[in-house]
Length: 201
Ligand SMILES: Cc1cc2nc3c(=O)[nH]c(=O)nc-3n(C[C@H](O)[C@H](O)[C@H](O)COP(=O)(O)O)c2cc1C
Image 1 (spheres, helix red, strand yellow):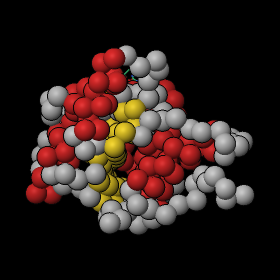
Image 2 (cartoon, rainbow, N blue to C red):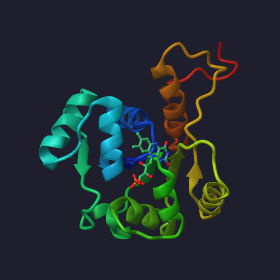
Image 3 (cartoon, helix red, strand yellow):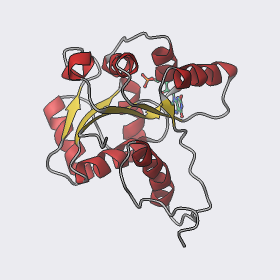
């Protein structure tokens, strides 16, 4: 089933570009996006892209839309807003993508902490058996990271590491980003030509 509503969580791992590009692509494909950045995600995003998602939500949402060059289809929510509809199984999104996913958020999801909206919604997705896609970025990986990923994979989450391939012969940073974002869209069941598929040339 192609999702109509996707919750994107941008956390404090490097790779804010992945989350922003995914949001843009989903909105352009008429998918409703609820977008949430953790406090660290907000800081890393500002560092990496210049986009400031802090402060007043309405103004920050405007800056997000301006950055993505879209006018609607995306709602910015605060990570402390546990009253947000996506915090409940009765109103869960069709899919959730944590991109990029920090090892901290990954660990807290793995043990069911549910301490903020991102962790709570991920917990809801697992208990409701809905698609939860995690896009971790860290290197090297410790045993703890690997064990958490295995535990989450066995619980139904899909682990899509931010690991662009080079067989598609990327020319630009956007090509590298689009390889990963294309893989995420594949997992959401959405047709895309964001990356060159092997054998397509
Ligand atoms: C510039 C910068 C880059 C970071 N990159 C990573 C990373 O790639 N992976 C990771 O797991 N943590 C990374 N961190 C650390 C996380 O931001 C930190 O563990 C934070 O507490 C995660 O919080 P969150 O999970 O609530 O977003 C980075 C921090 C900074 C300041």
